[in-house]
Length: 409
Image 1 (spheres, rainbow, N blue to C red):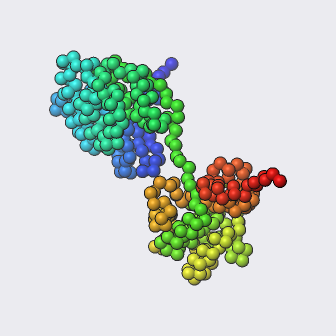
Image 2 (cartoon, rainbow, N blue to C red):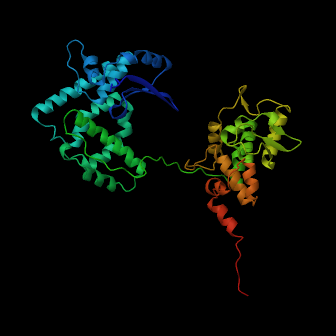
Image 3 (cartoon, helix red, strand yellow):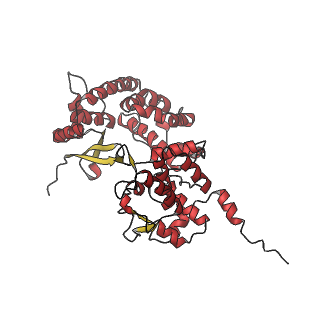
């Protein structure tokens, strides 16, 4: 049975900053992936043209650094990653990595000659061997990882690399009682990277095993908050322009998602029927197309409509002649100027307008079915209970004042 020869492939993933690229060789257990990072279109095209010329990973470092008789660096993943990027692009990354690897190789050779690999402490190994490679190749990582390493040094910095084990690491994580699972997971990834490099250059036979951290891969996002009626009035007063005031009022008064209000057209407002629609913005086909205008929306939107000359069609909210794409910045400015969050500790983002709609409706006693229809939800009312009703302490206290005293005659 014939065995398929592995080939190089260029893969990319869309992320907020752009496309993130990797050079991938082989598949299954033999798969190897090397990071190229965020590339421009020109760099991506160049990498795509050169991908087939890459040698196998085992020969890549020797081939890339066999220049002017210089010996190749240790076959670490960081060195190979730099070689891949330099090979596919303009070799500037290759030259930089060669200097880094040369420094690490010189220090490693000196220690190896003295038989000091296993005798090095973790802190000495990171600062003298692993750090120069890691932090020069990824400059931002030094400052970003500094506080994690300081915590690790406090507990394990004086331990020899050869004596690091699962029990010591587990005890360190348990001592960080205030850390979230996600913080522990990030710290473990940073620490494991150093051990992998130690194994690659012969400091230890292999990294010690690790236990999985329950919940470590989950990102916790605190829930958004809603505004009270008094706070809504303050935010509207703090709006930078009458148009922004109408935008905020529409978002809060109709409980829109952030993207729905920016695509609103004047043809979507029925003044005679006192209703409004958000076409193509709903999450499901069963959502209502037309919904009634709330008094808040009608008052502020009508003012904006009159200021605009009573148009029949065209974008409702525009800036410098173009429709709005995002109102996060103007919302943040209004929140700051309103004085309702002086410390900047509350999670008040544009989606808070939707939370506020449901919360104020709940406080006012609006039937749940009407709230759900106004928000263009076709699912059960449990969504309102678990997601959108975010009553503040004062709102809860005021509502509970109506609880009967149950006096005994």
